[in-house]
Amino acid sequence: MSISFLGHLSGGKTTRRFWLAQLGALSLGTAACSRGTSQERGQETGSGSGSDLQLSFACVDNYDRTRPLLDGTVKPEGIVLQSRAEGPGALFRQVAQQTDFDISEMSTSTFMILTSRGDDRYVGIPVYPSRNFRHGYVFINRNSGISRPEDLAGKRVGMVEYQTTAALWQRIFLQDDYGIRAQQIEWSEGGLNTPDEPERFHVDMPSDIHLSRIGPGQTLSQLLEDGKLDALIGPAEPECFRRAAHIERLFPDYRSVEKDYYKRSGFFPIMHLVVIRREIYQEHPWVAQSLFDAFQLALTTQFERIRNTSVLACALPWLMSDLEEIDEVFGDEHWPYGIAKNKALLERMTQASFEQGLSARK
Picture 1 (cartoon, rainbow, N blue to C red):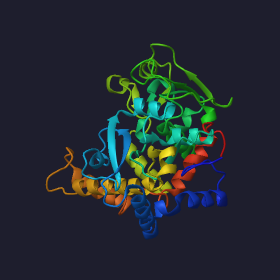
Picture 2 (tube, rainbow, N blue to C red; picture 1 turned 180 degrees about the vertical axis):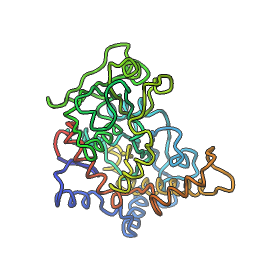
Picture 3 (cartoon, rainbow, N blue to C red; picture 1 turned 135 degrees about the vertical axis):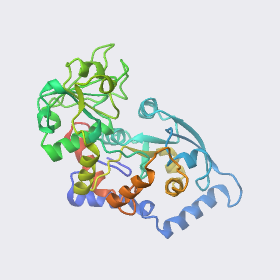
Picture 4 (tube, one colour; picture 1 turned 90 degrees about the horizontal axis):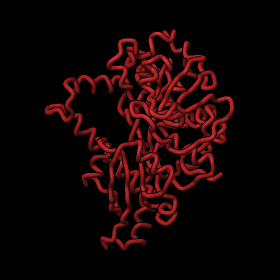
């Protein structure tokens, strides 16, 4: 099958060849690629003509690292972005089901699933607006008999959608670190705090994945509180965690657990990536490099702003201490774009998507 940037592979040499082929000059950021991009762009628009390409762009709102693109501080060369920002739930359903935007932020799990099933509407570029450790988002009912991750085997575990990238990563660390496979759990999906949340898109699961949807009018949060679910995984806190004393985090000291996970695995989990509508990429291939460069500049611009701690850019009292800890754990670059520094992580995601019954093939 034809896959751009990400794919579903068997590992080993095939995986390495794939990443190198899809990486190309874009992720390496070579001078040769930059020169070629400028020549192609000049031929299309006429150098200095001001006839920039108008492209629609949809992303999740409230990101510091994309804000410079939305407010015009950073502008992709040769492109004018017509931007729209909204919450991830509605946006990712729209992007999965339709092709309304030329450029969009997208769930990485959704992109892998669609690609593996022959849906090639989008070309991915190695820009990751959202990353998040997910150990802190595993919640348990204290009365369920769960005191350690291994106790999740055979339990009833809820999540917003089985296919989300957050849930993909939570199942990755449960398998890799605690030996719990997706096939060992009874999964239920539905609205976290609001009932009747629609599916992003339907995915037929293999018979060894035990998955059902909760009933109309029900929420995962209430079911966990009432003991009808034993645990929850997902992208956010359930409301019952704040009001019910018997609802706890499986990893109370999750920050320490996540730091240890990073030190052992090297993985700072990627949640979202950026995609280009295939027709746009095929007609204007230089767009990929222009966007990559702009997203990288936006990221750098915001990090420089945050690191000026003489006046805090974020309303976080111990921001300077947090930055020092980030440097200690991650080193010089804690949010790398491109493939070279994310290759092992991306390969684990593609492998896990197949193992967990999401991707149709490797």
